[in-house]
Image 1 (tube, helix red, strand yellow):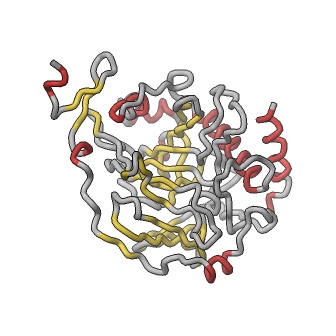
Image 2 (tube, helix red, strand yellow):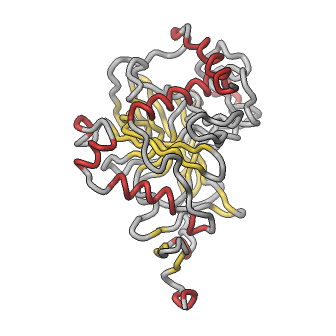
Image 3 (cartoon, one colour):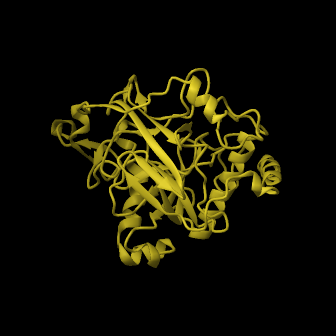
Length: 350
């Protein structure tokens, strides 16, 4: 019932789409150094600090003004085609640092808008272990802008509340990607992960510039051109947290939902986000400040004002990356009973 109320409230926002930026029909991008130009809008990345540390940050500017990775990038390059979405790369392929958008650092009180940062665990930078045969994150991993996994109700398909984050996606394109990259992708399906009793969707996508992108529209199509990938990645989501002491992660329904269902679920999540920035629902203490939609007084910050008042680094200051702890530089193995086996401690298995 609450979900229906949220959707109904958000539907009011859709009645006037002119209030939202309308991207051009065809999205083109050009990357040069730390900037990406999409439909004439230039997104610039500012990176400060050393990778693999808690002080490291990456901020986004749009046409020279502070912007939010979460709230100021459109979900859709073309709102008439919900199967194509924008995707923010947080973690590039084969890297293990848990890099994500910090949803609690707001665009106010002398702080830049929610930057990308290195998440922590027990006071130290968080990494994922290499679990055989995978190498760190085996795909590009990130989030879908202007979506929200609302924790305010149990979601219909999963039966669990959302995890209070933007919706996650994993990109099976062949490019390695880079943190802060913004790219248009096609939705092929999705996994409804039950992560500790919370709804945590992982949408399966492919970049439009991938060699097979024009030939694949579904999970089945992907299996035809890259056999074994969908099963391997599903298994990764099941087991990747076992190495840090967590349990096997279940997937609602056991496998992928189809592309149409996944696209509809993204649309729902986009509507939940619209209700969030409009102030219709409990924000659960996360930052939802944005610089795009001035009609939402509670969440809108003038970009020019933000640029002049906030202490945002004007230039990148990239330091040499700190080496990962040794325990994240070895392979781990999962036994038949889902027990963790360390490759460097064979006596533990005797």
